[in-house]
Length: 403
Image 1 (cartoon, rainbow, N blue to C red):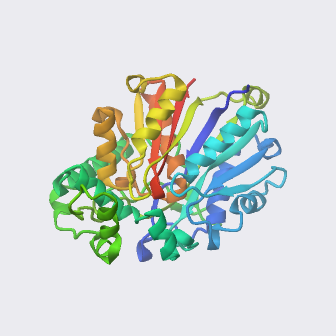
Image 2: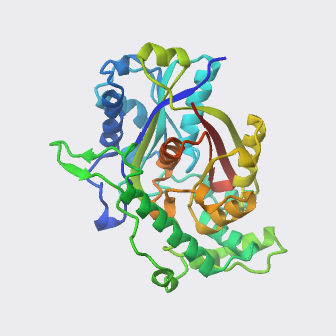
């Protein structure tokens, strides 16, 4: 069967999505996606690239409003890529961008496509999270029957059940910012970053705007708990009823040690070996294995299982992985993952994570892929693991092999 190779990966900067400080609010999601699509023509030197595209698969956590109604197809037309086939929008929470890449790879592997672009988009300043609603948001019977609790409360449950302290969470967050600031200063993001401009070509955002230099644990110590009120509305009781061995939920996550709302887009150009040769492109990596895990919907701890399943499928062991990427929606699950797998700090989220850089939900998987590929090349490593915990107990893990 054909192997699925990654030929290019790129991303926009991650911009703040908070009200009056939103960096890319003036950029419509369709224009952000269109700019990133056009960047592939420049990077590959193939102005005729659109004619070779068999599909564009875009993950989005909240496919509504400005980023709904199959924005994948709309962006192809908006970019002037009318010759490109397809256009598909998918949603698997914050794993959506990674799952779009996995789906494109599976199509290529099965022989149902030769060249595809896949990734994710999320403009949280323009489309509020959960605007699309759904039964797990709005139907109490579904929430109760599924034992679903909001991720913030689930993250606090992780901290409580694993004996993590607020100081440990804040220390982890400060470390994430320090890594991201150091990486930006050293130029480690430049290979994948695309500058976003307005219709007149004026620069709107050229680099990530969220990381904070010189952040200390003292700066975070006095921030109030972010999810205490939510827990008191009934979700703490649901969690404790589901897991009676935990006697209480400590609400330790604050705005300082959780991911920040962000705008962004990240894409990968994938194809078979023969397609790459036809286009004159050199592959950077191939997808070695993909796995999904599902734990109780009350939990946010499926990442370790998913990562181990992917390793098993690839015939690898934990010690074989050179670099690990894990999505930092919250500090406690990230700490649990790193300690549970036994990963040295210099091999784990080496460029920082979503706590420092922000989490444009549907796009974060593609952004993590950019980090992973760039670092595998820079450090001359071979194997990388990328894992994301999602809502309702889901987790997805993909292993990439540099070629």
